[in-house]
Length: 382
Image 1 (cartoon, rainbow, N blue to C red):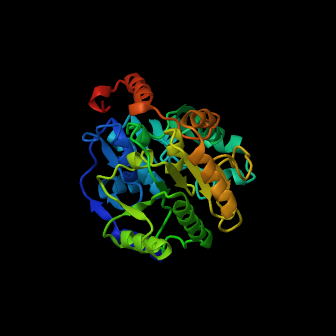
Image 2: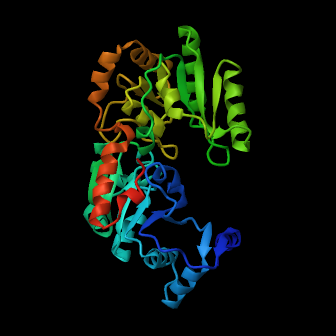
């Protein structure tokens, strides 16, 4: 047994009692944030899939059936709960695509983040594989996606019905019409142990400071991490070292309404985050500036990659040339709201749809639950 397997076994929590029966089952605890915004999860079982918790009763049943892989354990868990439908927001987990065939249940996923073909499921499109053969192994009954582009790509590798529903979390927040001010940058900072900051990121941030000073705009940075945490302090110091005091850092918190903050900004700048795509769906004036060189091993695909768009466009640029960056920012800042709305409507194929309060998504779920003789009012949030 490898050392990493021993470490995992020592760290995980063990449960002795069998899991509860549940007609709905949530796959992966990291799905909680998105699924709980649509469903009442009080009576729903959550299957933890990252080996942070092991149910010994299920593990024993798995071994008694002469099955010894972790996937076999997951299958045994699902079958024991008598679940009719298994739901996740970890949409790019290819193990999930195989559950329906093994367990005889219906499955649903909600897209939780932008898919760009780098360290996600769409990386498969860089490989020389027969997608028809891959598709035969994968099935998800309902796939709720941000946009038609993602639906089209999933349809090439997963059997099932795709529904363009937009971002579940963004849809739950009403679009603010408050007077807009300042430029807000969506932080892509990660602790040094997770990834090293590329020099291009620092150059872009400095260019944004210069642009804000020139145009008398308040520079705001939407932090990823919580205040007074180790990662939060590292993120704060990272930006202070670059920007000194010429910015307002907005730490993450349970009370922070990130969508309201981007709605209330005159310009939103995204270096390739999910929220940048969501911001476009909310019709905010948004600049997508990808600072990462598109070469191995730092390869990061950019806005318009799958649709074969040019390196630069009205509201995006793949690079850090200051003249180009300023031009994109000027475009976004100076365009009228009427013209902006007409412009971004042309890109709805690859941005995020906005479905206020997830009305259409919930209607589809309601019909699907009824088909499975599940009382939807027990689970669907109003």
